[in-house]
Image (cartoon, rainbow, N blue to C red; front, side):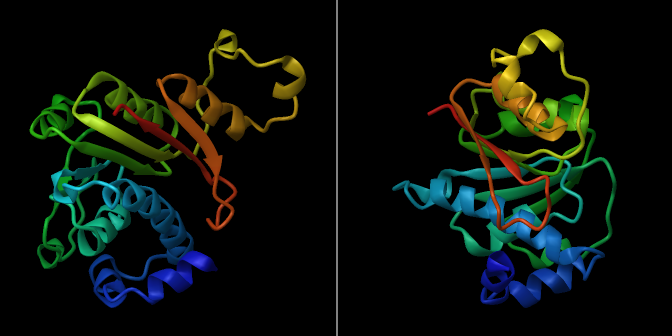
Length: 209
C-alpha cells in the first residue's frame, strides 16, 4: 500500500478525489497513477528548467496521472486525452486541460507539435491504443520521454522477438506484449512495479534525450 499512503499524505489528495470522484477500484487506479507520476517526477526534478515540460496522457480515463502531475510537479502544463467526454470540474486544476479526441486522429499529433518538450504517459491503454502511444513517441521529436503501463494484449508478430524460445516459454502473454512494445522504440527499459495493485504492472520507459 506504499502508493496509497503516499497519495493520502499529499496536500492535493482531497482535491484530486473531489475532482475525479471515488471510482470503482479507485485504490488500484491511484497506485497505477502514482507509479507513473514517480517516473515523471524523476525526470522533471533533475532538470534545471523544470517548467519546460508538458505532460500529455493518452487514453486518460479519469485523468489521474496528468492531474497528479499538474497539482504536484513544476511542469508547464498537463493534458488528459481520451475519446470519451467526461463531465468533471476540470477547471479546478491549474495548468491542466481535458481534451476529448481520438488517439488515431491528427488532433493529438497537432497537440504534441505545439510543444518542444513533451512527456507522454499512459496508464493501462488496451491493445492497439498502447501501440499507438508508442508510435507517437517514436514519430515525434517533441516527445522526449515516454512512460506507458500497458494493459490488454494485442496480436504480436511472431518474428518480432530476438529472444531465445526457452526464455519466451517462461513469459506470460502480458510480458510478451510489453516486451514487443518495448522493442518498437529505441533506448528504453522494461520494469515491473510491485507496488501497483494490478498484475499488469510493467512499465515501458523511453527517452530520446
